[in-house]
Length: 178
Image 1 (cartoon, rainbow, N blue to C red):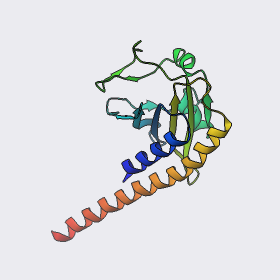
Image 2 (cartoon, helix red, strand yellow):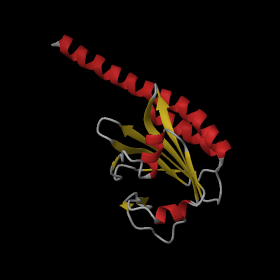
Image 3 (tube, rainbow, N blue to C red):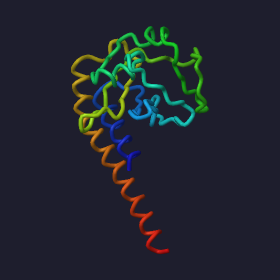
Image 4 (cartoon, rainbow, N blue to C red):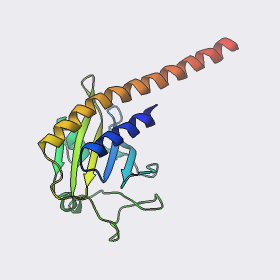
């Protein structure tokens, strides 16, 4: 199941590098949408149902759009400063509601590392990890997450295909019963 894959990715990442937060987004190339699938903040898995899908920007404006367009990892070691310049930023509050306003009682991540999820030559999403530490990420962290992301992308694709096949089998069995 896809959720168990997400859980395993988070478990591995949080053990091998600084990780106060992590998110996984999917990319729908046909509709040009980036959709948040899962987020952890300080070890807590959060409800992402209120986060709207982002429109993919073909010019690569926007961090996830840039990672998808270039198919390359990005690490930012002054993430708070970067966020202050962005037009669209979402914050998840304790009650899981979504806000575009920063709440001063919460510390914003200081470092970020984003890696594309690529399988069969296609970008299917982005893994984003965050740290409250300054300069938390470097090229070595990027290479580690890239290696993990290729395996994760394949597992995620296989899980989706399996789910689709199970659904189709169920539909055929219903038709045969009639």
